[in-house]
Length: 511
Image (cartoon, rainbow, N blue to C red; front, side, top):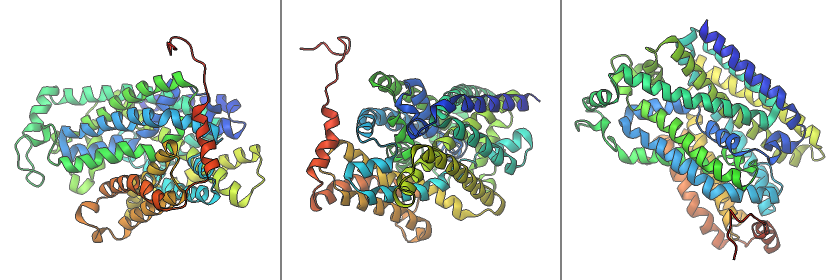
């Protein structure tokens, strides 16, 4: 009864906020960016909750914790330092300034305006549409076992419930409703992960006893070094490095993450948001991977070979009190719904502004664009729900494989072109196209021809990292040998950085 009551209260708050925020969602700028007036706390939490979903807490934490032991915590530290701190420092201010100057609300629109290319805008939009849908479907996967454990509820009901509730508050309130709900969901995630770690370690005699138990675990199939799972770098530091890079550096090229910088209010918000976002990632991501690192202590209760890595975290939590299990369910539901809302806004805005308005309905006014985005949110959530149901009912592995490569394809396609476009006047349209095509084709080939890839590249994680790092070389190299960008267009884009702003003495001492 307590579990259901908590869920009902939680759902009522989400929907209430969605309805309250309708006044902010009357035009494209308000619906997609919250009027570019979102403060540091809301932006930082929106960034963090979009970053971490059930995929991280249930899937990645369980899988990598099992493989690397407590060394998996490095993935969480990387998410905080590279994926949050450096992302805000390197991209935050410049993204906010140039996107407002170019009047772009989406990543494809930024490419279109920055390089004066309608085709580039449509191409980027197509990549986002193709690879965000399977990524969206993957968000449901972590919920099945937890809901089954807590409520003995069919997974299909969980999917439909989550989809409908997310659709209601996103359609009603747009980005502002998403940001406020992300703040609430973020607080739940912070409190939940801290409480769960304490409870799980306590069940094994406390931190030192749990660490000692982990040091005694032996698995000759992974490593024959005593205490390897309780060591600083774990049994396979190189593979762990690839995990850290994909899950950390990858955020720099994900449209739903970068778009958070478009909406931030002012300079002070960027400074505060950087600190808040980093601390949030350190607790949530670091905590999740740290918890997963102790998964092998429960090896007598879980059969990874039969049930898969997704069974590890639910098994670790199954012995907790009903109240704590309720908190975990709401924690994972919050993480998934916040990421889902961010993804569907990114998908619907991109398809409306950058595809339909460009190629099909060129005279679409503001109200019709907002209506179109609301309709497409329903479509995207419906498609992702159907994909999740198909995978669950039929065990279709193809969908799961496509989910695995979507992050690498998106980050590989957009990270380098977007980063260089913010900082360099020499980047060309051709270099963007080459990077788009290289990463999309590489990651798609990784699905169908994986056995033909070199051993180290057969993992979608390693392949995704290769795509991202290759892009950082491809863009400047291709730019050297292709037609130079239009001088006037480039100078106009970079003029926004030279505009003078008057600040108080507490910010600058002056001459």
